[in-house]
Length: 464
Image 1 (tube, rainbow, N blue to C red):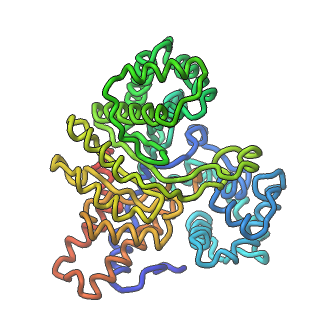
Image 2: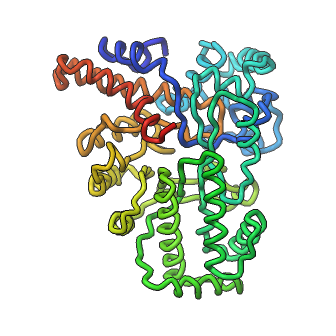
Image 3: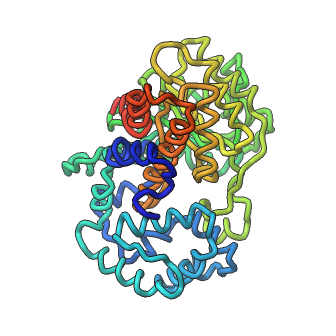
């Protein structure tokens, strides 16, 4: 894992070192805690920073026979780190092996391999450096050349920490992203009723009717815009494209929810379809980019969900055929002239070609790459998944217009995923050049394409 890691040709090395390596990072989708950025959080140990919320590592540790006490339990920081160090040698060919050592090298300057023999030395060296000012939350963002970060925020969030960050004069933009999943989650009626009460409180609006509910959400949407929000995001199992001809049908459904009555499956789909379309219209009105992450099955392990809650690392790729509903959803928005800039992320790789061709259906010539297929997400953000996404997008669309990589992470040490992506991209393009599949006469265009995908396309697309 030296300077030319993953770069297998001279052209790949040139593209990376001369055109991709030093570009700033625009991390337009992540789950960083804005409070930590506002307070310039100091991490007590590498365990807190590295293992505190990383379900990728938790899954690997469980697979290696580590009991939960050393993963999400109350074991000491050293004991948890020791168990991770014992697991790392067994992650060979898993992206965690690459990510782990990239993070040690780029953040801490540590080039040793992590294993039981080196664990104590690496643990102590990382912890000593974490006491230095440059290893705080903001310090790590500066270290990696981050220019913009977009967090993931619920409509009821106060965004007080985003405000504090902006007022502090921090040079890196930290912007909120509108994520209204709970406003559609009518499968659990008690939780939905609690959410409506919170929405009423933060919006200062009494919510008695469905129109009141929509007005409160629009009020929060306006507030997010005033705080610099430029993106929305939806985490959905599938797309909901059913046409609701009469909003009175939704009024009746909302009344059932108010009374605490469970909904029929058809009513749930009607409500979700209406809300997804409503949010899309709001996004278009403000010129935002809307993101759709679809396809996971979440919280499949009841035991861990009860003891830990969501995001314990018990989610998986789902199997759903949502192509027709997706097409209906975007077609309806296109028909009414309300289709905003859109990024689709699929979790099941079986849908790669479908999504790559779907975005081509709704490009309208109003701007380059209005409809985007997002980078390999979650279980697909490894070398094979990234290459598959790049290759299929190249075959079915315009790779040159792609807005590139993001971390989708809760960790301040995840920025090397941008480096990982850039190396894979440059290797892919470099190989094509040296195989004669891309002409050397196009080298200026090829170099510009690499820079665009790594940085400039995102900067222009999101208007940062």
